[in-house]
Amino acid sequence: MNDAPSLFDALDEPVARATDPETSHAAPATVDRDAIQRMILSIADTLGPFTHDDMCKAVNRRRELAGETQLEASTVRSRTNELVKQSLIRDTGKTATVRKPGKKRASKVTLWQITSLGHFRAPSDERQAA
Image 1 (cartoon, rainbow, N blue to C red):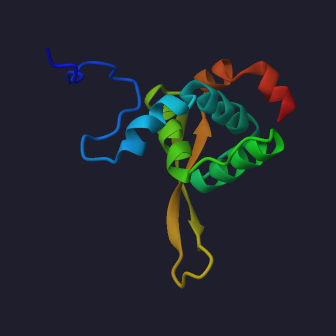
Image 2 (cartoon, rainbow, N blue to C red):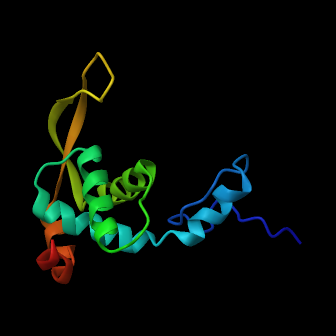
């Protein structure tokens, strides 16, 4: 019997590609996706329009204060994109111009914000702690 998941198994679960290293396959089990999403909503509720970089910094500041390990930017970006798909965060239609340290050129990045539905779903206990 083949134990490999089918295309339709766990569609909303983080999944590594078949070509990814073993550590990538183990990683989804160690990430509390829901807790990260709740944290992002809580921060977005107080932050106002934000870039992915703004959100990464805010999430990692909060995790540092809690004595937790830092998250990779790709993890925060993935959880934010999941919230976009749930209509809890949206593209404002505006951009910000940013220049990364050591780079000559600036680039435009999307500004995101929490939606009305996201405000409703943001954890009230975390909202007060922010």
